[in-house]
Image (cartoon, rainbow, N blue to C red; front, side, top):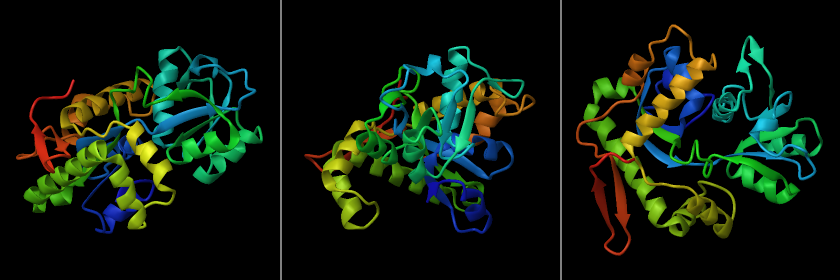
Length: 283
């Protein structure tokens, strides 16, 4: 299952053993006891920030005092932007908050921006690109190309502590399976999009979906996934998202693990139809 706002309920009811999703959305939940550990990065990018074409906002540096529409106040779009705002000296902490985040359903974000209810929106693909095309929005930040985020994984895979305890081999197997799926998308974005559509996994058309998949870096990596997790945790503690008393070293140690028999990642060789293990850490 994809990680989301209902993940805790699904895990608590025993309906989920493993899955993937926007890891930064779950950092606070993990700190508060959500029993999952991440095991590998899946892909980078997929989160974008827009203003209207006639806006005077040119970059993140211009966001002081602005209203920002997001899919949820604990969403990774908030976490990413707060990290970027810290970098440019704009306050995001409780005692020095210089921006306002407003939650909207994903389907309403583009409308909110177009109507002027907010100055900026942060959205995830495919919603982000659909809004851009429909309304002619101007992009001010793209985690798939921005120098801060381009080598960070937005979406990562996890296993529950219950699965780790009861079936560690299964936890390793599902990690390898998702790594291979990611590697396949990297090598064959059109075919991956076709499989999704034909099996009613996503909506959209083949050309649009395959282009979105092709834009993202789907080379999986456990090592770079862990670096991403650690970098975000450290900076979000500074931002006041994670508690000041949290031991970040221990938080990373338990929140991101290495499973026996799992390589750093895979590459899919389309010509041979074979998966090649990546054994060296990804830089």
